[in-house]
Amino acid sequence: MIIPVDSIPPETLDNIIKEHVLREGTDYGEHEVPLETQMQQLKQQLIRQEIVLVYSEIHESVNLLPKAQFDNQK
Image 1 (cartoon, rainbow, N blue to C red):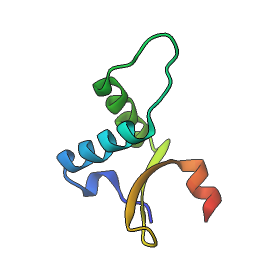
Image 2: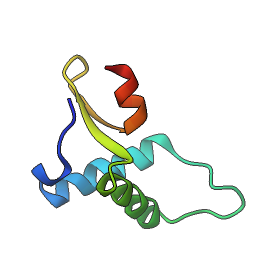
Image 3: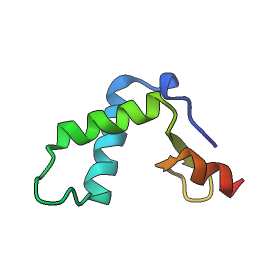
Image 4: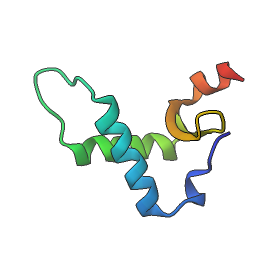
């Protein structure tokens, strides 16, 4: 189930994004990208609906997924 980004408090969204960045880790090559920059990039992708916030009832968890990946799982 997709959770509309505007339906959750901004602080909660920030915490979800931060947890995702810290859990996933990302290799940016030679230069490390600050956590705040990574979080802002994900937030912009959510706003553009390139990625979606998904709640899994089975796992009782929230995750960020590329929209195309979510659409393929339906």
